[in-house]
Image (cartoon, rainbow, N blue to C red):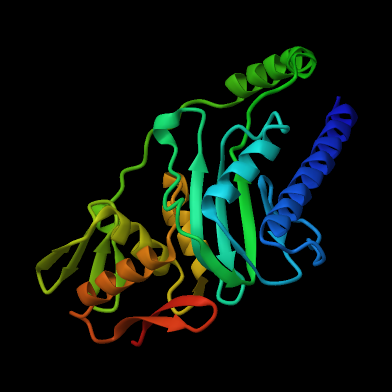
Length: 266
């Protein structure tokens, strides 16, 4: 069963890469370029691919959306996906949208604005599928039943450990960060955070004094919503800086060409 599944995955992956190269080829033709190359397709995650180009080009968002939708219609597993067009010079996202089976969840903004000529790359993230071929499922049921029986016999429920609410706090200099309730506490004063500000600060707080790439922040914070706009990240970083001004030893600094860093000078 494992060999059969691996062979199918390899074939589907190869077929998908051909479709992605076709997308790159058509976008170049639509921009008036019939000579430059579409570079080898990169698989940057289990369900995410990157299309890169040999030369600069411009694109019309409406044409890009229709081209990708038409070609990915040939991939039965590509029914829901997120597309982000990045400026390769600084990794900023210049255009992004989401296609969903439920049209109410789709987000396709700014279709009418032509993007200027630049060096772009296109990231396409497919929604993971949990479908299993019937043969695999039926063949694995006896084994799963056996494992379940052993698991139930071997383990007993354990009492839930008590936790101290204070243990959920993260210390940032003289500021205590309560991610669960989205609050900053300093000198018995409380500063409220929005949901996005709290998620953003939580990522920084888990890796203080370390550079976090801009693309990582954008993916972790806005990917689920589908629309990822570079300027939104800058806006939330700016708001977060102001709320952290209560402690001058803390600052979010820009690492040029890479991302941001939460600096804590103790």
